[in-house]
Image (cartoon, rainbow, N blue to C red; front, top):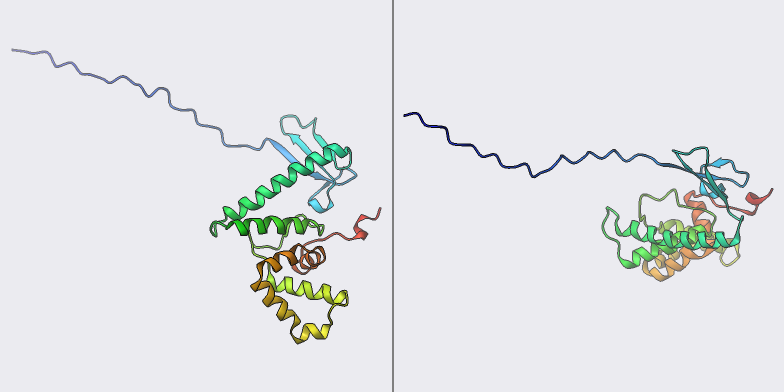
Length: 205
């Protein structure tokens, strides 16, 4: 006797439509630095303003020059300072070399602000995120400033003063931190390390 085949059961499609493939993240805007005349420059040290251009509306860029409005300048400075603190701390904490301690994070924040006081936006000579202070260069910077101010002599430096400062910097973190933040030492350190710094001559017009 011929029998009918058993009915087949097909589970309903509950998955819904396949998710749309997101477009690759694309650039939305152009950020540029401007000097006081409005010309585009490449570094923060020579910049006095910013230009923000939405690529969908290039005919209507937004520009701002420091000094145009003291109240706006203050708000931008406060926002920028808070952001910079967060960026420096996060960079050390999230470094591939391992999580930075709280002390290392605040060291990085203080060192960055000390560098700003020398007229340099960033230490372009440092090796990666959260790079350590070069204690040899810092000891050299201290001695150079001390000699220039007549506190010690070149003979003192040659006879062990630099080595003594180097040893002190290694052993006393608080001393090293204070020395790194002292503007004359910070400026000389930046000079030794090759970072650009500002002098009075740079502001002649």
